[in-house]
Length: 114
Length: 113
Image (cartoon, rainbow over all chains, first blue to last red; front, side, top):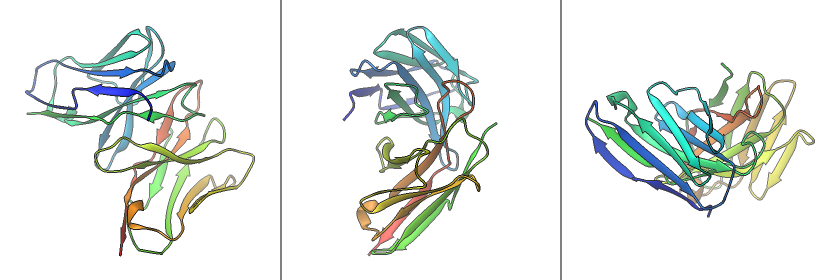
């Protein structure tokens, strides 16, 4: 299994509070991604990174920010959580650009915003 | 926005039967079409992928068929087993640089004995 660790795996929080999800990899892969998975919507890209301090928006980036100060860590922050951000969040990594190579996914972080 | 349309949303197949999941795409940067398999409580994992030099690829009981002119590709699972029960996602490369894959909405497959 690819060395990807997401934390926390489960979190319950209240509307308006900040939340940070962490993705840690031991594979030294260049690309890292944050997806959210919701029933009826599949996997939707939030943000991705193509190197340290190099990030770009995905299709559902509003309300989210990311940071990557080290190759191995990619943080997803919800500045002020809303109920619509209740979801399962998946981190993924790829050695090359993910559009022609394999993505390796973490186990997911289930976030509930009350 | 580029879309990948996947159908059906859910599928129930008898053990030993054939499961077929279809995907249609609008445009793509190039021909690379993976399928990912996800078991409950786990992250998706690459199952099988096809590249432009072939119209069909088979790995064990899993086959991808690709129709470039129709902009469609499909996953066939032969001799479906209860252990194949999972959610399946198709994906396609998004146009424009090294942007990540666009995923379909997923198909929940249940194989019943």
